[in-house]
Structures are given as structure tokens and as C-alpha cells.
Image (cartoon, rainbow, N blue to C red; front, side, top):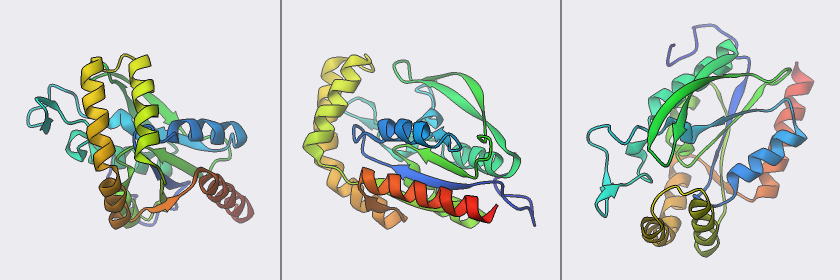
Length: 215
């Protein structure tokens, strides 16, 4: 599958990139958006993590630093979104976080009547430029957040999901809380803008309404 749309091709859909700190509630928000707008197509970008056995993965505290963009396959994520927007479907990995491994894949197709794809994940800002060059970028946003709130939410979620050993999750959570302000600033430099959850819902509604008028 090509990294770029075929020359002269008219995309079937364009992409709204949605980023947020781990624990910011972006997945819950996306679930609510899907209920309200069944014509919305969603891609979970976290499924494009590299496997834990890949050589050269960045480390933190003696373990792989899964919050470093180098642990994520930006090229594969971009390629999948190009296929989805131009061909109407793509193949997305099935990623198992507790074992840090790809366990399979599944097809994602554009929703009936859908022209907007929400691609949600921690590393969404990493492909702003790629999608812009491809002519497939509709918008790029990240959720405003407070480190203490995301720390509590993230720890509760990860403990409940048995994602990693509890001590590892606690140490990781504290480190992420310290880094979060700098992370949000970096995302802004990469081309996303800070918004509230209510603003995301308004942005999606506006884009869907605009798409409906032009089709």
C-alpha cells in the first residue's frame, strides 16, 4: 500500500488527528463521539506500537520507554490511514499491551456515508506533517489536561487492566506527570492545537456537517 494517495485521486475521507496524554480520557471521548455520529470512522493509533522484541527500542529505568515516539511505527500508521482514506479500507494490527506484542490484525472500513476519520492516540502529532503532505489532514488537536488528574486516571486504568507490574506503573506514572507540560508544548510545535473535550465534540460536529453539505 502506498504512502501517498495515487496522483489525481480524490480522497473518500480526511483525518482528524486527536492526541492526549495517557489518562486524559481521549478513548472515552471517542467512544461517545461514535455513539453520537455513527458515520464517524475511528482508528486507534496505539495499535501501531512496535513489538517489545524489536531491537533498539528506547529504554527508561531498565525497561522499554513506551512513551517515546521511537516505540511507535509512524510509517505504518500513516500508510494505513492513506489506504483507508483513498481506498475505503485498511488493515490495522491487534496489539496486546501486557505482552507488548502484535497478536494479529483486523480490517477497518469507512463507515457508511462517512468522510471523516478520527485517528486517536498518544503519538498522533507525529504524523501531522505526513498527513498534511498527503492532502489528507482535516484537523489536528490535543486535549488540554492537568498532570495530577491524568496521573490518577492513568494509574487506575493501568492497574485495572494489569498492563504492567504495579511498581512499574507507579514509577512510570510519576515520570509522565513531570514530563506532561513539556509534552503538550511539543505537540503544539508539531502542529496540533490544545482544545477541551467539548471543543473536540464541536469540531467533529462542524466537520461532519460541512462534509454532508459538500457531498
